[in-house]
Image (cartoon, rainbow, N blue to C red; front, top):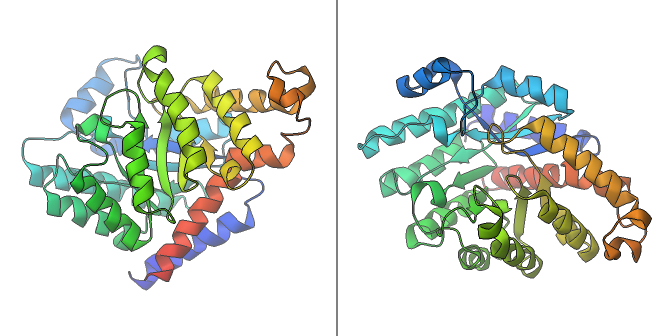
Length: 337
C-alpha cells in the first residue's frame, strides 16, 4: 500500500471521527460510470425514461438525491445490473475491475460524500482472479468493505471458495460483505451463521438482513431467523435496505432493547438505485419519531420501556454506527500495512 493511499484512508478516518455525531449515512448505494456504459445498458437507459430494476445512476444523480433526502454520506459499490458479464472470465475480471476503479475514483473526488466499497465474484471470475480482485480492492483502492453476491451469481454463500475469499478479506483487514436475502436459496441463515463462526472476532456485513428481492411471504422466515441470529453472533452487522418496513421497525426495537454491542450493529440504508433515498430516509425519520413517543406506540415493548429511543439512539442508527464500523475497518487495514 503506497503512501498516497494511506493518507487517503487516514483522511477518511479523521473526517468520520470529527463528524461522527452529525452524519447521516446511507450504508448501501450502487454507483455506475454513466460515461462508459456497456452498449446494451446504454441503449436501455436511452430508450425509455421509465424506471427498471437497477436503472443506473451516476455521481451527480446520487448527490442530488442525497441533498434532497438529507443524507450526508453514502457507502458506494458497483451496480451489478450495469456490469455486463461475458462468457470470458478474464474479460469479466477486467469489467469488474473497471467498475471497482470507478468507485475508487468517485470517493477520491468526493471524499466527504462517498465511502468506497469493493466487489468480487468467485463464480463469474476465475478463482485466482477473484482473490486478486480482493487484493486490489483493499491494497490498491483502500476499500474498507469487499462484497460478494451469491444470490445474483448463483453460488452458496458458505461454499469453500467463498470461505477462502472471506479469509483473504479478513487477512487484509477489511470487512467481508454479502448480499443476504430471501430472494434465492443461496443465502440462508445457516450460511451466514457458518461465515460468522469462522471469524468470530471480526465483523461480517450482511446486506438486506434477509430481505433483498423476496416477496413478503418468502422472506418472512428469514426475517425472523436473521433477527435472532444477529443476537447470537455479535460480529454480524446488518444493513437495513430492501426489506419490509414493519420488520425494520421490529428489528430496531429488538436490537435497541438488547443494548450494546447489538444496538450498534444495524444501519439504515436505501439500496439506491434499487430503492429511493428520499423515500427510505424520510421513512426512517418518521419511524424514529414514533419510536421515541413510546407511550403512544402500539408495540407494548416501548410502553414498558419509556425513553428507549432517545436522540442519541437515532443518531446511532442513522449514521454513527456505520461510521464507527468504517473507522474500525480503515484503522485495521492501516495496522496491517
